[in-house]
Image (cartoon, rainbow, N blue to C red; front, side, top):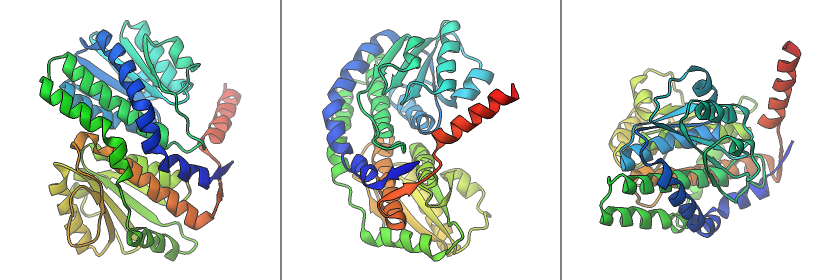
Length: 360
């Protein structure tokens, strides 16, 4: 499969404009849905790949704003192993609306009488046949590497959290309006993010100096930006840039004896409460003499950093993900030029389905 890297970069650059255009419609659709699901006492968010990573960020949003216990779970794990309390709500995310295990998760919940919401970009997706409620978003990625859809899913989950928190009486009128205004301002904040060429050059030099050996990049995310680390890991792998590993910030510090060397690069992603602990990670990386870059609302340590605008920490994954996507696209362009040929996940999935059919 050929990936047009110019189209990929165009998708990422156009995110602020697309978000500003469709945000009012998403908000209205979400308002309609919230009328029916605000009595839920717990929420399960499910999906695969980038949709699962969106679910992880959504957990922080829903618990922080709506004060509803929320669990993100891979849809296969949910379908086969999870217990579902009767007063739960299932939020199932699938851009294509056809992800088999996510569709099965919705079917299971519906059979058990659990309220369901499908968030998808496909008005004809199979998931809509089984979900009781839906939020359908008219947006597509131009290439088979999710970028804009992931940003939109995060924005949608943020709107769901605000509206649900308001419906449950968790927000007073002033706080509701403040959060809503900040959410609708995100397009402008995305436009204001600048990535210093020095930081891009640092990553590029690191990737190229390893020769034929694929470099290793650690992405370390604190709080809701653990989801950003997971997104980043996926983008670097999908674009065949580096062997990438995602760590939750506290877990990274817990395993402080990880044998990092000067041949590895770490990207620390922290905002809000996580900045203090992110500073500890930065000090550890300094002691280990490991290459490091930070993405944050606040300068950490004494090196350059990639600054994202000040924002509620629970919304910061939207800004940090956009930043990571731009970095990944820039690296792919530097390495491969205009096009990249890959064996993408969808092609591999077809092979797996064929093998499974033969086994049966």
